[in-house]
Image 1 (cartoon, helix red, strand yellow):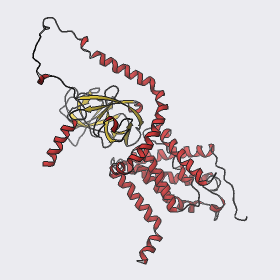
Image 2 (cartoon, chains in turn purple, orange; image 1 turned 90 degrees about the vertical axis):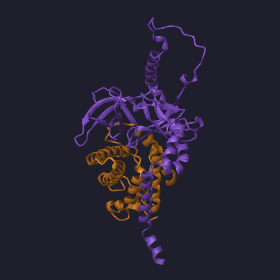
Image 3 (cartoon, chains in turn green, red; image 1 turned 60 degrees about the vertical axis):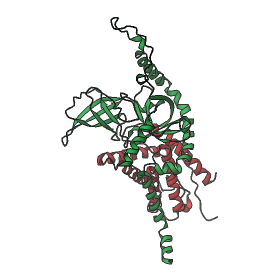
Image 4 (cartoon, one colour; image 1 turned 135 degrees about the vertical axis):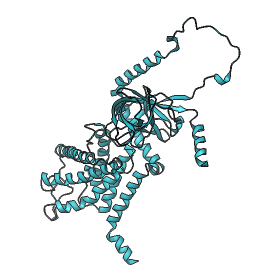
Length: 284
Length: 177
């Protein structure tokens, strides 16, 4: 017993070094779950406050860019107005129906909620965005986030009282499915961790016709994003010799360098659909 | 100002500079300029080794909290905090210098060259361990090497400029009082 104490005293520094190092690597591998549970609430309150102070100053420098993109967003919305379209006379015929049939009524599935970005990074291997909305605005984990021009930014991974953390597309663990607008092929988006604003789309079969400049949109297969949101435009196409798939590099529609405001997509059906999926997974 | 108070100010200053100035600079995708670990380089000679490691860990952990990536900088800072005493023992020109001066600087390490070697080796260890931990999933060796060398070079230049701009006055102290 005495020898053990002597050993610990002698190699105390080495033991401390290895145990702290092991703790750090555990934090990395467990991917922030433990961090979230133990230190998250406390450290997030402090970093969130400091970030907000900083952002209050810095947002003035981006007012012009924010304004420009809002004008663009408005333009595309005005172009979708019903009043802009005219039906040919022979078709338009006024019909007054006294019966309302509920099954064909449209109802709202996605709701947009604006939020301010307080912290943002693009230089790391795993980039996160912090937004100033949280539990108090009824945010949940797994909600989708888009920028002001309605192109994909990422998915909410952590929710605190007044702040939430968004895993951006520029994250090594981010796997959103994307679809080629023209040919309809779907694949998975993966970031290689090198260049911001350049993402790879994997698993596109070689039978698909792709050309540079094609649009990539969300597939609508998940409950996070509706179908057809812009993700990016094809920049380069690589043929892989070992398998039957293309590797498509594309430029994101979102400019991750100067995000100031984002919209959060609240899917009314998300909890119901995910509940069903969980129940099915548990049965098998 | 007491050493303790001075180091608390330094801690806050370096974290704020790193998070709000250097992390916002995008020199190149390969290069991340780092200066915050100068806090560990500048800690006094006479510091308990266990305490030094704990301080290093806390420094890294604070930066990680701002970046929402737990573990990476804590591990790297812990490593250089562990290596620092060995390196100082190797580098100091003669016995007893750590009683004459308070903390590592150009003057106390015996010139610019030994100090920059001391800083350079610690930076290389910090960056190599950090980028190794970040890059093990990607497995691109060349990318890792170039990123480490490039970031170390830029950080070293930054540290050199910082040393020239904010010269820390070091009093020569003797124990013949």
